[in-house]
Length: 84
Image 1 (cartoon, one colour):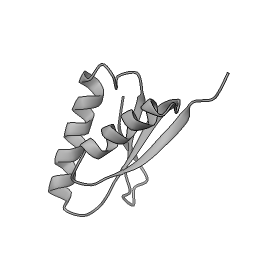
Image 2 (tube, rainbow, N blue to C red):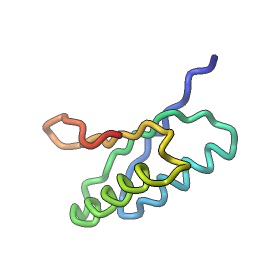
Image 3 (cartoon, rainbow, N blue to C red):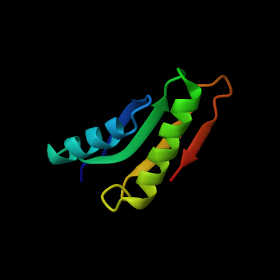
Image 4 (cartoon, rainbow, N blue to C red):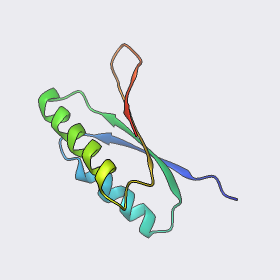
């Protein structure tokens, strides 16, 4: 049994880049089991909007619900945020 791979993606203002990359890797035959998202620090208000969109799509899109999804903060506190 193969160990599923992990997609580590940075998140800017375009949340669809993460989901499109994941679906393309799946199409290419990669066995991705977890998605770890690291938001960039630029334009915090726009990044928050992207995070909200990404959270929603991972919870509602039937193609994406099977993946473990984590958002990792790059702040000084070292805390992880949102996970599903």
